[in-house]
Length: 512
Image (tube, rainbow, N blue to C red; front, top):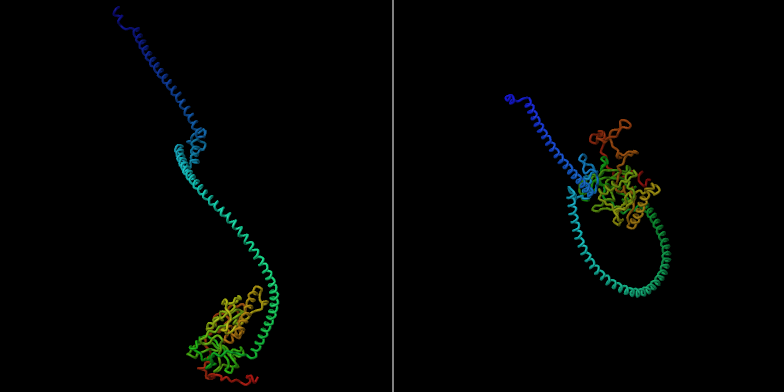
């Protein structure tokens, strides 16, 4: 019995299992209870932390709201990270304020901006205080200057008062003297008015008498001028002398040789009119001229060659015929006056430039002239006793020209009247342009005129046109002539003899 009882049985195993289970359950219960206690403690701590965080967040929100109120903008958003350009945020509004109001003093934040603004304000206040000090000093100086000025004004006012008093005294004295002088002046004026009236009446009577006398003088002058012209036409008196004479004539070559040369200051291209050796006085009229010559070569001291420009077929040039030009005298400068249209070739246009060339060739000078615009040149020039001739060109009547040209023509005629009077006073002979051209031996180069054609009027020699309307080219002659007219080869022709100056009695004035 005893041995059987020491062996474990089912009860023992059951008890052991029960104990073990109980221990395990106890341990598990303990572990669960401890974990629960730890989690409860942690929960309590977390709850406390959440409560503290809420209090902190609430405090920060209150602070943010207080900061918004301080800044002055109660926007919901302090900053918009998703849209930095959003103007409805506290940050954007604050930055705009710093930029708008801080301008050059704006900083990166409010503190820096306020510091800069404070510094600028302090500097402005200091400058204001400095300016205020300067203003005070200037006001003090101004007051001192004002006091000095007031003192000077007082002195000047007193002096002015005294001067005005003295002035009134002087004016009073002067008024009395002036009244006396005015009375004297009124009397003198009255006497002067009487004398003026008497003088005006006497002047009017004198002017009437003078006008009558002037009219009589003008009529007498016109009558004298008319009688002088008639007398000149009848007597053909001339005080001109020949400049030289023809020594030899070659009619076949149309050449003459004259007794003037380099010692006489003769120049090529000078022209002369030719008179017969029995003439009644050179320079009387164009009808006395028998021909015209132009100097071509200077051959010696007193000999020159000239070509015949024009010749009277009934009065051919012979030896000892006299030559004359009013433009040239050995060693002298002849002076000529001109007025009117200088038309040398009869085309109705002025040839003043060509006339000046003729004068220059002969060594003559223009004493005074009237240009195409009616202006007397040189300005202030007059006809004097040294003037050789007054040459009168064509001057149309005012009613023969367009209205726009009448003032110019009237001005030219006015100068003509003055120049004729000057010539009469100084004993200067007045001649027409045609007579003047005849005296100087001028031969116009004008040969042919076609209306509307601008070509030169010199007729060119040479080939004829092959057909009507053919363009005109160079038709200068080659200079070759038929052998029949060559004196060296022709057997029938004999050298032409120079005329001895005698003509048939049929052509003499007595025979006529």
